[in-house]
Length: 610
Image (cartoon, rainbow, N blue to C red; front, side, top):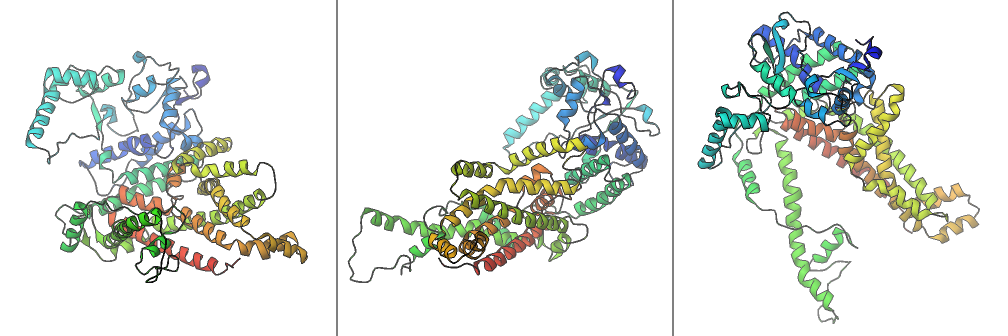
């Protein structure tokens, strides 16, 4: 068919293989279901702690079939989404597309759809396994109906009665099938089918006694993180950056390690120390209502706290006994209100900073799945966080590389812009506003925007930003520069405008050139601005999360995953790894704090008084 695609009026047999991060579930979950299902079938089990991926070669061949006979080149797959794929099919560019019965709504919503309801059908996926000629399409669900055991007994009974009616009563079943498109393997649904064409075929498959549907076994996969990483390895394979042996090796080894880790997870019976449990209960019961002082205003927080001291301070000295002082309404009102803010600030600081800090530090030495079942494990979490199987050390190295490059380029670029925009040129205010505007855009929006732009450019060479970690690195650095350079420029402009003109004139009278004046007069005088900009750039780049998530999401194969993203993935995507994630967060905090203190000390020592 691929060789006759021009005669058939199509661009490829299969619609685009979407391997963009977050859009690759059809291959790392649904297609991967097949080799695992047949391995389970052979072993007569429903789950395995270790898989051999016996049908790895079959998995490879069917994946290659999609890649090499689609509407796009294999190297372009990592930039494509499910929407792109469904549009290919709906617009008649492809003859086939892998998807489920929900796909009809995606097809019918495409503007210019050419596919009629009576022309769309399911076909089983065959991967060359013995006995699969008796298999039908894959059927299953990841969704389960549950009733809240904490709800009132009357509400629980009413819910049970409703579900019983919905799935067993003729009227309820008809409504569920026709209005909600529910497909259920119950007798009441035997003669019923959803209104959409693909839903009807699923219903017919359930009632077909001659063929056996392929079960959905992917809910037994170790974790969502496992599937996400598998998708990235598949993208690397599609781009030619990785061979299939590495894909199989990842599948087998990571499956075993994550299954083993999940078995060591906590249950609700795990013990926690009484002091921690009591502390957590008090935290959960307590209402955090203490306001904290704003960081905005004409004075720093340190100044405001100094004013709260009964004995006064150098900034706001106490009035000597017997000394007269005229005070207006403002002073009297401030004196009444200020003490309440002074009392609130330490409470807010304790509740919102000190308490979470020490709780997090404690939890990093425990194994827990919820805050109330922590069990002390010593330094095991730290050993695992920095161990060979951990992604965190690599993420730290990549974070350091991005930060070093960004700190240099952002500050050099920002200073250059500030230097030229403080010259007497036309339109300087306009350009200041233009350069500052990117800082107002959220990181997620920036990430996706830059992803689209860079992929559009790279597609000319058959590449995407997630095909190579060096492309991802370059993209992140460009994004950071575009977002932060304007903000740092404003700080440098403020510093340059505060350089005393008489010092510049004196240097010129002494015969200093422009470069000598810049190096020996201007730079030393704006060291406070340099200190602030270096600190802000360092903090923003080291803690970067949303831009990393949106631009590359760690692809390919977590090679562009920064520390913050690594910690979040460990916490929420790896079963039983909550304590390890907390240990990673503590390590990250200590590293960033140490670097920031060293940087502040080094640059402040070079500051001079005007």
